[in-house]
Picture 1 (cartoon, one colour):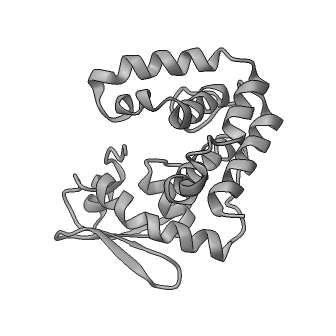
Picture 2 (cartoon, helix red, strand yellow; picture 1 turned 180 degrees about the horizontal axis):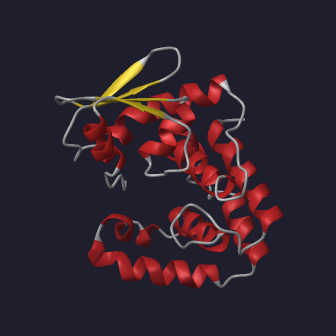
Length: 203
């Protein structure tokens, strides 16, 4: 199985277990809201502009709300089985999406712990990390370097007074996608570290 398919299945299994009203790390969204988001992302391409462009946001929110009113089992089936056009490009467009949203549900639960190290998962996510992190750290007033435990690293923002963030690749990806429920270590000047930690890292 590919990472995207593994994460999709694991996410649907977890949402099935927790039900439609469980919390997530996606602001006020419940698992039902998250499932609706994932369903329209692949099945209602007319809602895509609203994810990035405020002028279209109301339409996207309306369609998502409509999907959220579907029966929970129907909504999960829509997430479980991607449309035919998605399947050939599933890994390309969905590996990080489903990994992050799976973790959004996992890490919103009490006493969560990072999953065991998985070499294949880390390899895929490491390829995703530079593009995403350079986008979400673009407004940093200081340099930012992300380092994994083996010392390999990526500079995501050039600049003086740099901050180094060290963690497993999965943790760095969650951080780059704007999540704070992560296990990482910061090093650098205390003021610079605080400025980096307080950045808005919205994708």
